Amino acid sequence: MNLIGKPWGIRYKRMLFFLSRMKSTAGYRSLSMDSETLPSFKRKRASFRNCLVSGFSTELLEVVSEEPSLNVLFIPGNPGVVSFYKEFVESLYEQLEGSASITAIGHISHSKEDLAFGRLFSLQEQINHKVDFIKERQNKHLPIILVGHSIGSYVCLDLLKRFPEQVIFVVLLYPFLTVNTSSLKQSVLAVLSRSSLLGASISYFWALLGSFPMLISRALVRGLVGQSWSRTAVDAACSSLLKYHTVRNALFMAKSEFKELAGEPDWGFMKENVKQITFLFGDDDHWSPLSFYEERGLPK
Picture (cartoon, helix red, strand yellow):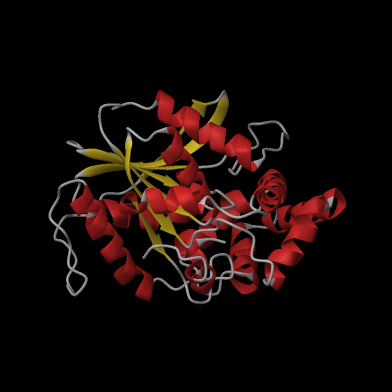
């Protein structure tokens, strides 16, 4: 369900197009899709910090601009471990040439430590968490561009409805907006997420893998699921994903996702705001097959 599960090669060229849309939307010079050279702007390392949002400790991954003209808020998929997206956030800042501050906000309890003391959070609770973050943010005078991945795209559309004056553009990457009933993977995951016993068993298994020395955990993650992952993504999985509370929360959130996304998305809202929304689809992505949206007349 995460971008890091796919090779980065073609994705970077696709992202250049979306970044150019973002810059032109905010009144900046557009980047060319045909350009083979990256901007000369020096990449800045992203930093991690924790802050209280909705009364819960929340992991943030940030690259702060000295003179931002806008804020980019990135909403991850599920699991919502922000360290997975470190290279992406740094690249995004570089492509925008420092014109925007970039913030990736993690989901509650999708983190290294269980600071919610075993509590499980639904999709709607995670959405409310992001609403509170926007309400409490600094630089409220600056416009916001939302970037969402997978279920994070669904969250972004909800935020656009709630903050139409602040959000000027939304980029949806491999969006998960409705259940794909023809997907075997989704059907299996739906069954697993509905069973408390299976959910606990799976969570304990992944936590067991995380109890090994880091060298062994890295090898297991790369061998089981991360053959194409970067070193950063593998380390993120070992430090934050191989935790009982993270996996348990990811499955509980998935359970509420399948329930809430069982119906049709709000096509009317997307069509009304088509000038503020752009999509990136993957041909082999069972969470958001392009054909599914073409059949429903989604504006291109």
